[in-house]
Length: 195
Ligand code: ADP
Image 1 (cartoon, protein in one colour):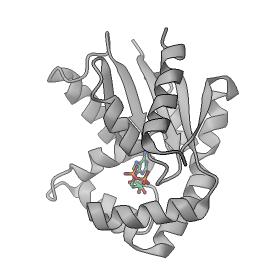
Image 2 (cartoon, rainbow, N blue to C red):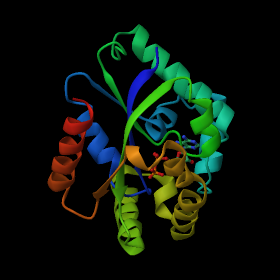
Image 3 (cartoon, rainbow, N blue to C red):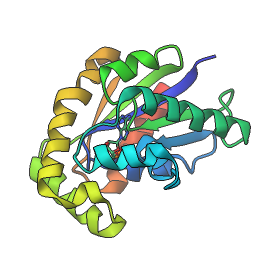
């Protein structure tokens, strides 16, 4: 059985994490942010070192270990009863992050909708990321060159994922609005799609 999935999509700093966390508090929604799965690895895990190595340069972690780790996390969440695929909608944030990952997850995910948190203002994204660096102690947000590189990787590698799933599934939401209004728009779309 494929997981009924909503993808939260958008550039770093577009607010996916903020909105995803809220959606995850709604009964029968399970939020999974791939970056959080990496950050929760213990320092003793060799993949934690790989994660820091790539992230600190603003690059994506290689696909194979990423998808493997994600599968382990989801299967474990199922086992401990936090995620019940029979009833729950999976809200994914940060994965799939490029075409190979989308292909690898094809037999696992039934993507019902893509909520595309759109922000055309580059400076605004950079500002948000720099603020987050201070608040959440994130290495990858602290350095301007790394931020710029991540935004480039997003344009080059992540954006093509939109085309992969097709225009019909994409719901574009203005992420420059205040968070309450972004949430309102997201809920309206989910309401329509999951009926
Ligand atoms: P942001 O959306 O702001 O980039 P994330 O927490 O989603 O923040 O990701 C932080 C970093 O973690 C990424 O820059 C990347 O190095 C790594 N990462 C997260 N998800 C993936 C993924 N699906 N594939 C490869 N690398 C990933």
